[in-house]
Length: 296
Ligand SMILES: Nc1ncnc2c1ncn2[C@@H]1O[C@H](COP(=O)(O)OP(=O)(O)OP(=O)(O)O)[C@@H](O)[C@H]1O
Image (tube, rainbow, N blue to C red; front, side, top):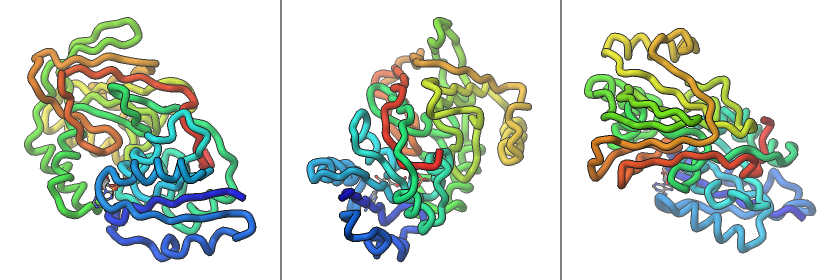
């Protein structure tokens, strides 16, 4: 008997629980599966629910939401035997796209029954896991604007991007140590990714793999507003590698220090805004840290 627990974020994406998930137990033969469904009631609740499911003997925990929900569930499953599965009902659904899990709820549920379990790498920033990506600069600004909007749909995200384009300044000076080399930079954006897709099928790291034991680092140098627009067009056309002010690195770990040493800085990790308390970040990767059910 396989024990499968669903944890649903009811405010993710469209803010409605799809019908397929309301009756999800019907998809699983009762002689082979024991299914339980739980609803996340507040930010961070999915962490508690995942820990309870672990105690209750779940074999698979299905995060139903976007990258934020997946992060809450997956953070509890690092180095455990329990596998993560995903039903992508979020807004951007970057990680699900990277793992080739379809947005169609019916198809995503079928994967849970039919795909073998495999392992992927898990990145951490200051010890806290992230599955997809983290960033300083423009992307953190977009997330900050997006959080202020009440809606979580594409238009809200698009407006958050436009607002960030209007007000963004390049980041304060950073000292970065990676692959034994020190780099000093004040970039438009400093982005570290374990996966390919950021969300809405947009990507800066299509060459990334969640099985190579390496992080993909993207540094976009300080740019003008005109160059920002040009970069946006290249992003949509999947041609950012032609942008001259973009640099790519593959690393096992890196250290980032805000040189001005102010009290508070911001970063985003898996689409959630976080504060950087002492201006220092250590990013590393744990190879094969998470079991997932995905056609990756
Ligand atoms: N009942 C709830 N009420 C309010 N917020 C919740 C609730 N349950 C979970 N959350 C929070 O909702 C946030 C957004 O969730 P999530 O990232 O899964 O969806 P999304 O933003 O629509 O998708 P994506 O990250 O793929 O763009 C998470 O930070 C999570 O902690």
